Image (tube, rainbow over the protein chains, first blue to last red):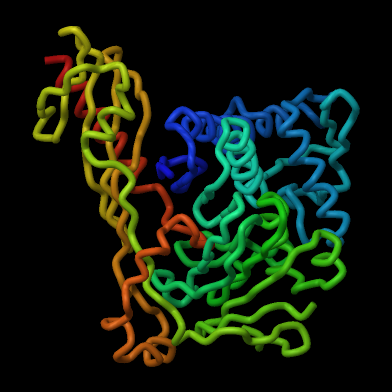
Amino acid sequence: MISRARPLLGTLVSIRADAAEAALNTAFAKVGMIHALMSAHSETSDLARIGRAAHLRPVRVHRWTYRVLACAKALSEASGGAFDVTLGREGASHADILLLPGERVRLKRRALLDLGGIAKGFAVDRAVAALRRCGASEGSVNAGGDLRLFGAAPQPVRVRVPANPCMTLALATQSEGAFATSAGYFGAGPIDLRSGRRICEERSITVAARSCMIADALTKVVAAAGPVPHLLRRFRARAYLIDRDGILYAARA
Amino acid sequence: MSAIDPRLWVPVALACAAAPVQGAQYLTLEQAQRALFPEADAFAPAPLGGQRAWAASRGGALLGHVMVDEVIGKHELITYALGVGADGAVRSVEIMDYRESRGGEVRDPRWRAQFKGKRSDSPLRLEEDIQNISGATLSCRHLTEGVRRLLALHAAELKK
């Protein structure tokens, strides 16, 4: 079992696996590739190309970008807009994103997209897939709190306490699965698109799901709209909350 | 801040069950050197502008430099190694060691009160390392700034 950590996706990405150094390098390379494709700050990313031209003509994107956009759109529709990757300027919404055949993206009106609430989870999923392809049978990938476990052996998972992020509470012990947490500590909390206010400054929301992409995106839905039971059931997810007093709650099934 | 709706949420654990975050050691100096320059057969100390650094070479030919630095954030202390090729291009950044301050800043005194007498004697839980912690970690701003500083130093030294 080896562990490595590198700064990527604007955070610290750590990988642990029973694999050779080369397998971890491959997994880090996948994360770096997703960073390049889906960064909101780079001029050459797929997102920047969509922002520049997709309101004029279809823009061909990488299949991974297409996949993340398709998942984002499905979550937007399922959550009634509580999750939305369009930055709500000039009235644009997820309904303005058209996903055309041939991995092409068209926007009904000019809009800027931000995959910050979902791409990190997808990067973790791709890193795990790469490790498995390279022969790893057990390990974990953690991108600044977006976490995925794989392998047969159960692993303990802890979650930070929002009022004191240097302390953690035990959340679960399991062998396969993904966890993502949204919180205001370290200034990284999500913003409610409807009010423009930061959500959960003193509480944190954690979602456990089968893929890290779903877990990542659902934390934003739960933070904005609460633990909507039919959504959690549909994505086979569980939701947790830690309040300002450090009490851990689980969403009722 | 609205109250927690008991129709939606059930309490499952109390704050007094909390344990401090543990640090993680990823690479020793020697392992970091090997990870950054696997083809090298020698690493000679070669400080660059007062910074700890090693020249990586193979058969006497210079491959590049490994520079080691520490960054201190609000909660964390990170030791990292930067690999720079002889052409000045970054090979990779590897985290060697990651530590978080125990306790840190507690904003809410009401919450802190629950921990009175608890934090200092919390047993270390060494089997649980940093990997399996969900919840945003530090921003990498300090690290990015550190890498930028090392690269500037490297460029200035090599111009001499």
